Length: 274
Ligand code: MN
Image 1 (cartoon, rainbow, N blue to C red):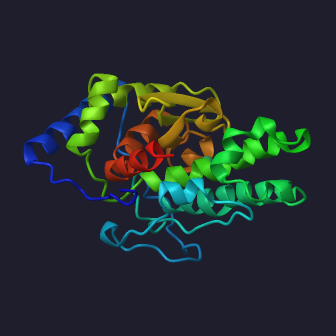
Image 2: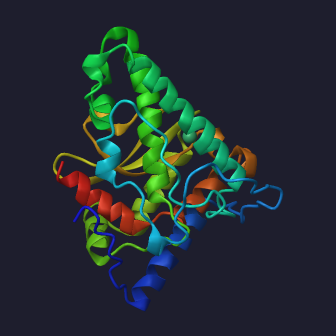
């Protein structure tokens, strides 16, 4: 169940319909969408670590493994090579984002928690859900860097170079809660495009098991509001500025095409049992 990454056989007409809906949503939402350019980027050396060579070999952290991480936190390798998502996300951006930004949040979270042994047994999910119950002197650090640690793991988790389309079961849940896949995608893109400054947009699950779209500022995670994220996009400029400059809409259009809906469904299965 947790690892239910079985790509349900989606019959060809449904696959075409879904791709068409994606295209329509992208066109409506991103009227100036153009193909991202990555020709100027240098794929360069990869960060240390091993990468799955394709999705068949993909063995990334599950959502439960991410949520249940605890002190001391460590930076896991990306689930794909840094250039695997080109041209949507260029290798230089991936290397800096993962190796510098994500590592930075992890280092600062560890530094904040180091003198607080009573918190070392808390999971990453618990830290994010309860940052405002922490000792006052570390609340801001747990909120910002605990969020930065968790949020980026979810972001790496949901993207793939060979993304699966939603299964019939996931489509039924999306239809139930949003009316259609198209409406969900438009609401998500709208939330992501209207975040003022830095933040995230999310597909979240509430306590009744209903799906919603939410946006959060800075590195806030929806867990603090009692909602559990199963998919999210980073709209900090560091996530896209090298390749897209100020064209956040183009980046969001490219991101929508990278979402592995089999992983999102596995995340749903994982967190709905939490
Ligand atoms: Mn980021």
